[in-house]
Length: 90
Length: 227
Image (cartoon, rainbow over all chains, first blue to last red; front, side, top):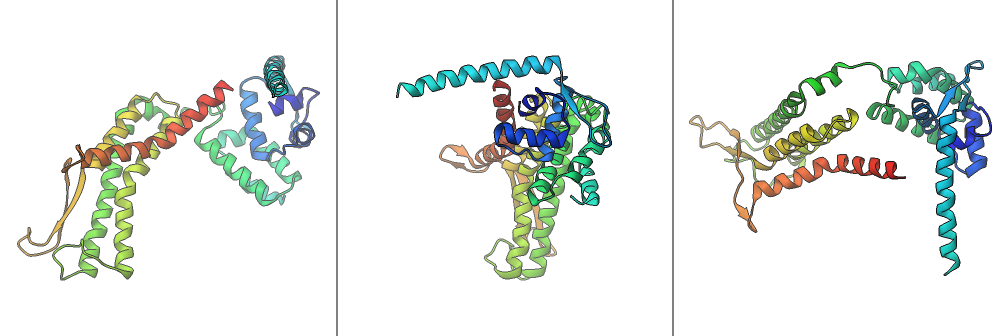
């Protein structure tokens, strides 16, 4: 989800994704973890590669990826809304 | 990171993965920092990719995969059996040779010992007791990697647990006329302890330990899917 969220505001290559995810969530993904996620997301058709720039290859989110990200974030939003409401009653 | 080291790290990944992502991944490693954490992350991820390859990426229909589908009885029945037999042979050989080397005058190798002799016998003991569990883990690894149904791996686990649970090593000098130390294996359920035969109890322990990593993997997968 971190990779999808990072690509939601435009195509990025690996290093840019790592830095963006740090800003977004405070989590620094290791290169192996990032490329593990990229490979799986690409095979699922949720992201796609763009032509390589030198040796770096940018990726962009697909329409299906956007739909999945929106669904996941909506679920998360509902979950946090209910959770926070319950905390208010304490 | 040093470009040579980055190149080496990329080589830890399976070939289909390297062909698709190798160049860009190497560029990422080359441009990024190269601390111990990064190395550990890459090594672990490469290992993970070997065990659980990205679906759809590995287009090769490997010989191994083909064997798992065409002859599951061989992969999950015969192969574990042969491996277990080999491990038991090595363990018995260590027992027999240790007996000859360290305890030449005794009627049995099962006597209190210490020092190097103890270490030697413990190696054989370790092989003997860990073999069914390690082979069980290997069955689970193949089943998880090939994403197989649990029927054949289950049969393999039961077979290994049954053999491991009922195996008994006997050693005597008197059963052979020449008086040469004689080590042999027998398979029996053994006397009953608290209503459960010993062999059955050991078999259940082996079965539980052998399937544990596979069960954890299935649970993790189920939890990941439900997220």
